[in-house]
Image (tube, rainbow, N blue to C red; front, top):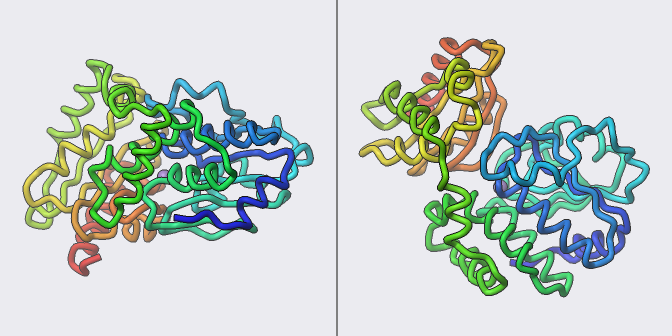
Length: 325
Ligand SMILES: [Mn+2]
C-alpha cells in the first residue's frame, strides 16, 4: 500500500504539527498517534499530541499523560497544521473538533462511515488498522522504524484485528507489515500480554453478568446483552473487559451479530457496541442509530434509558438480519 505524495509533502512542510485522535481512544488510535508523533519529531517537526479521552480502556491507560485532553489549553495559532488519525468524522474529536476548522488538516483513517473532512485525505477502509497507514507514511518519509514506534504500530494493528483473528486471506499485506514491525522490535507475546493479561477478578464478574443476561434473538442469529450503570459503579468501569464479552458471545454457534448495550452513568443514555462474524454490516446498523465504525465492529450512543435502548437495538438488529445487511 502506498502513501499519497501530498501527505508526505504535507508533514514534511509543516514545522509545528498537532496530532489529534478520536474520543474514547483505542489502541489503534493511541498507537497511531504516538508512533507518528515519534517519527515526525525525528524528522524535525515540533509535535503536540491531543486527544479528548476519556482514557477508559485499560490497555491505553499507561499513555494518558502523553496527551493534552483539554482544548481550552491549546491555541490553534501555535500550530501550522493538524494530522487527524483513526477518526472518520470531525465530531468524534470531541472538544478538539474546532481545531480542524482553523488549520490545514490531513486525515489518516480506515473507517467505512462518517462525514469526510480535511484537506488531505489518506482514507482506506480495506486497511484493517490506521497504524498500517502510519507505517507506510513513516517509511515513505525514508525513516527506519524505531523499537518504540514498532511496538506502538503493532499494538494498533493487534487491537483492530483482534490479534489478527478478523483478517481474511486478502489482507496478507497487513501481516507482512506485522513481520516488519517484529523485525524492528515489536513482540507479539508482550503485546498480547499487555492487552489481554493481568485482568482483575472484578472483570470476570463483569463478563459473567454480560453472559448471564444474554438474549438470543432471530433464531439464535443474534445475541443481545447489557451492562447497567450499577455494574460500572460496583465493579469499576475500568474493569470492563469488552473484548472478552465480545469473544465469548460471538463464539456461540449460530451467532452472526452481537450487541452489547451499556447504560451510562446518568441513566438517560446508553453506549452500544456491535460485532459481526459473517456478512452482516454492523457499521450500517450503527450508522442508522447515529454512530459508525467498521463492517464487523461498530458502535453508537442512544439517548434513551436502558429499557428503551434495548428495544431500539433489538429491532435494528432484527431488521438488519431480515434485509441481509
Ligand atoms: Mn482503527
